[in-house]
Length: 141
Image (cartoon, rainbow, N blue to C red):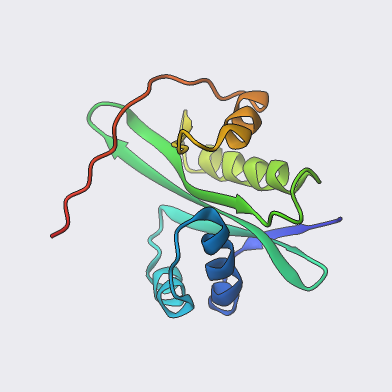
């Protein structure tokens, strides 16, 4: 399956929302469309298009912190379960890496749920190393 990687657009919102369901994060397409419109200069969503469908996406941002300096972070990454193991994820990852380099980032980080062992193996095969395990906390405001 040959996929084209491009920057996501508002018209991709429904397809991105469907893939977010597979990832376990249900978000309405209308919210995705609004979020895509608000993306800042230091954030991008890449989509993989194949056979007239969106079969994957990766969201990447750049942020500078006091602790780590300027680095890029993969905020979300998914390939449709019917399209996995066909090189699409690798192409999305390469797009994320290139974007990070172009934005002056020395590192690309990703956080992945402990249950996603297949994703962990993918990242490790592609040069990522586990640097720590931690708890993730959230407080609703």
